[in-house]
Length: 420
DNA sequence: TCTGGGGTCCTAGGACCC
DNA sequence: TCTGGGGTCCTAGGACCC
Image (cartoon, rainbow, N blue to C red; front, side):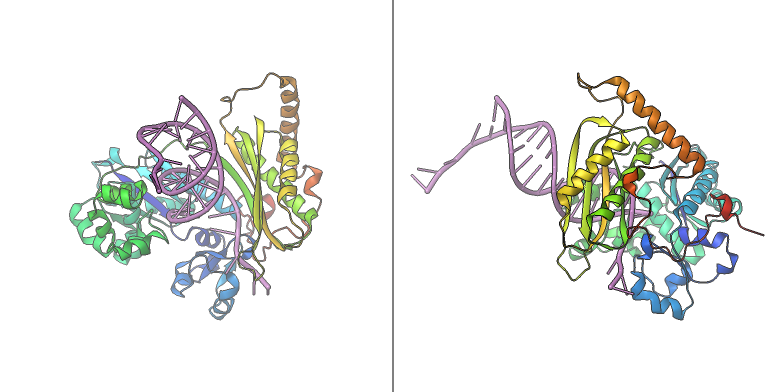
């Protein structure tokens, strides 16, 4: 039997905000999405007030004020840095680790089966807490799906004190029937009600169904989930992160935009952000898509559109990508709408795998490479975005983000070091 | 007034082939 | 009235994840 552990940070973003502001301890804390739009993280105290995940801020403002909830704008450079530290500590405890998201990692514990794993997990938890200040919970199981489910128990049941082991069949038989199917990894908003109508209400119900039947009626993924719930490890630990297939940069505007000019700037900006990631992972873009839309919640009729330009040969050329993106924008922009959001999507090709054509001038690429490297060197020295294409504009006029409650970037910016 | 951003995978259906 | 059979590839859209 393979053994998986899932370590998942508790209320990660809220815990990060607390780290440098101990006064927030035991107080309800929420963290907002970009543009201060939605609530995307809540401390336990905030959850207890009934604030749901993803709730629009404006609908909850009154509750937040009444209970003196601490409201924070998202500070992803802080969370990213703390995540890196947590992962580093977790890495000490197993040679097999898959970083699954910003606040979660699977550990392979096969080599540790001689240990009392409950004790070992408590040791991991304690160490992460002591070395980073972030609380984590740990679930253990014979498959990733069961480890995930064990983690839910570890968080929810006070008696578990942050660690739960779901390897034992008797324990599974006791827990799974009480676990709503919606808690299962891979069962979401749409699937849960559909399953309920067929009498599948608990994780146990799902596990009892014939995988072949589930595959025919639903999908191969759900069949796999049922197998995983039965203790069969179908999903391997993926230690090597797979190369990205696409890179997306998009954001709501700080306010609604009607004119094309500021949208052009925002598009140029997104091309650059996507390009930075592209360079970071040494890939090439084979196609670029630009999309633009109005708010789906507005009273006016919705308009959304997108346009894709295929590149004759894969490229990393920032100026070229920007030019193509502007052309794509012209295809989809219509006068008269109050736009809410735009974005740029790069479809990637694996570098070195493409067939060049007869007419590409290789010396041209060297020139571009020098230009890109210089651009990056300057921005490394003077700060991100110090040097950029003029098409981004000089001010983020109208499209810049709203962030009215941003905490300092304590760990990634010299100017924001905490004072003691 | 105000509703996130960044991903992956799967499926259905159409276009196309012989 | 009646209109093959077997296959591949691509894309859009949907569902899911955090």
